[in-house]
Image 1 (cartoon, rainbow, N blue to C red):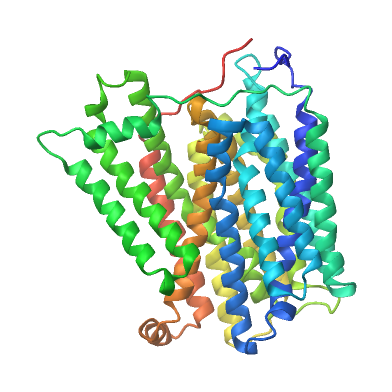
Image 2 (image 1 turned 90 degrees about the vertical axis):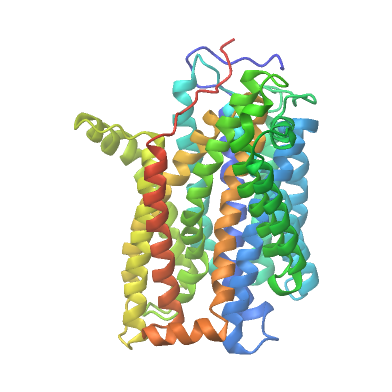
Length: 515
């Protein structure tokens, strides 16, 4: 560990460098992301029939988001095992800058533009689990009570950057040029990298963990391959690998990204469940502490898995809700994508409101708003948001002119859900992760976003099948309204399952010792 120290009981002096980096990086990311769908529909996809452009744009958008939240696995592993968090963040940030530059340079070239999206997904995804966990490394047991404030500030600044990106970038795209609209985020990403570099001498640097014979994967391997009276766990793991191979075999039909994600999901679900069934067989060959660490991680992965429906709903505000806004009544100067500015603006209000008013009030009435409880209620509120969005869509489908101001209600509900799930989840994931797995566990947290977007792609692909379309037609609902109510039900069921599981979940305290 470096000579940088943490002042006892005080906010670490190096935190502002991380916060400033995050503010600029989030402006860069959301500035690019929030104009991606309208740019694709109006410019990049002109080769496609007009009726198909919105669907293709949604596929490109959610495939990109899947990549962004898939590459944290790579970044987390490199940081935890090879380079450490600081150097990994710096290297991936440089790739990120190059990707943003390619977008601005190739607005009229699909190959160059998509190469830029790939590098942004790689760079943004690679640093995504690390910046938050790197900030967590700056705290220890002496000042961990301040970590929640830092994580809330971290999330607040994310939305500060997102707010101005959502307001300004659609205007830049409409009134100026795509080159400028995509060039500004590139400049902000370069500034973000400089801010992070400036704090290099003050950071606490937790070194990468050496090869560990008692690592998560080694303990899991021992548990699965140690024979016993019943080998149900091993069989379950093999089923997972078989399903993964089947998903990859259908790459041409599913497309590469969804196929790979389905393969990974199959291995994680069935391999994790199989490991849990036979985990005690690893005792004796591995220390009890290592075995219990694996058990804790497996329990945590179930939490992450139950949160994936929330991400299915949340990320569609930049695709499905923008397309819905296109059909609503609004001033000529107002761009549909600008409605997304309401989300970060509300986050900036709700985070202090929750901490200063709502949570103390709930405690006063005897209800402890623990992290696990907040996340469960957040998933439910996201479902309610989509019920409202579906009701709005019914009015639009029926020919009733709907003012875009009606979208304020679902945005408010979804933002409240976001604060309960996402802002809470960052600190929760860090605190629950064993010391040697901080980067990887944060990567799994972000992988839940990938899986959430995977559900969107699979649902959209399903409604293109004639059999499914005929059943939707039989309900009297449009395809858009049907999907909105479908995702609402998906989230509400997940919320109920999350609540049942949370009752038996034992929280951990994995901040590093003081000193």
